[in-house]
Amino acid sequence: MKRRITILGATGSVGQSTIDLIARARDSYRVVALTGGHNVAQLARDAIALSAEIAVTAHEDRLDDLRARLAGTGIEAAAGEAALIEAAARPSDWVMSAIIGAAGLRPGLAALEQGAVLALANKETLVCAGALVRRVAARAGARILPVDSEHSAVFQALAGANMDAVDRIILTASGGAFRDWPVERLEHATLAEASRHPNWNMGQRITIDSASMFNKAMEVIEVQQLFDVSPERIEVLVHPESLVHALVGFRDGALMAHVGVPDMRHAIGYALHWPERRALPVERLDLARIGQMSFAAPDEGRWPALRLAREVMAAGGLRGAAFNAAKERALDGFIAGRIGFCDMARMVETVLARMEGDAALIDGEMTLDNVMATDHLARRRADEAMAQRTG
Image (cartoon, rainbow, N blue to C red; front, side, top):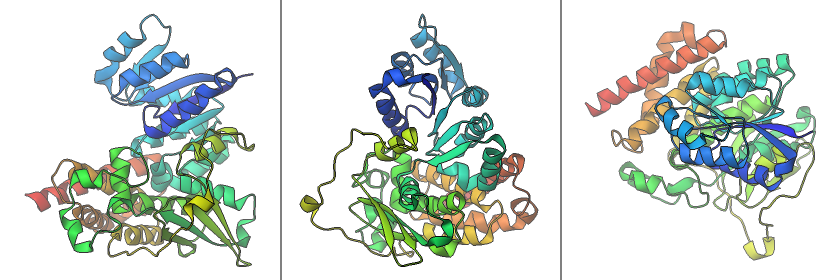
């Protein structure tokens, strides 16, 4: 039987890489649902090419356009959050969760509730609601497979080892666009400069998050949630070449590293074919040509996001949801030109401090309602902080 596949966030870079792999073995898969955002032209093209059952745009004002592009194909068209959740809940064997931001949480939970393998590329799902997500997966008998290159690397380096044998987990970071800049110059970094990644071809938001290291801060929290390790056992190294994606250190002193070219199809393909390893259309690494690789400890003065992530993990509760919401709004503000590059970390720290006044909420039970309430409140606090900073 063909394997049933759903791709949430099909028009983004991870979604497109997933489609590339699916299209290469078209006869092996039945595509249930594809979802996307504003780019309904791409969404419709992919839905037609893959004979999807339904295509969903997150934006209700794009529904007419999507319907027109799918007219006569027999493919359903839908729009809005409820439609995204309904698509994710359709019976599938494997669901790629690649919707950007907290918007990916509810569809991801819907996929887990119907027992699918969830290939998780959405960091926010675990950062905001890790305990809830793990609880839903366990109840439904679903499986979560990490697709972030770093978390997939950890998963592969563990190779079934008992977590009691793990001494530390080391994530690598490229350092982003500003890794070689003088710290004092960061205050004047422009949107265009922050949007150019030296190694990876990614969307604008994640590229800026890489430059600010908020992306890595989120990944540190995600490691804690995925692998149930204490925060002090999670480390970060700046590795400009982006060839070593993560390392796992064991109690006997051994380090197991996952090494490969920076191509998301590595991690996607591993999750798609797990527990098997199949051939993938990625470049083979030539270590002799590369010659050498470099590593350095991150300067948390340059990248305060890492410090904030450790504080969030230490305090626990629903602070991950507050951290992510504040980060998303700060990023919105930077992209809109309302605040500077360094103001993003300051805003997030301000919001986290103000959220401590709502301890009954952020120290409350990990339920979906409480997660969403924390998210909404933190966004409001962020907007207030941004208005004070720019007003």
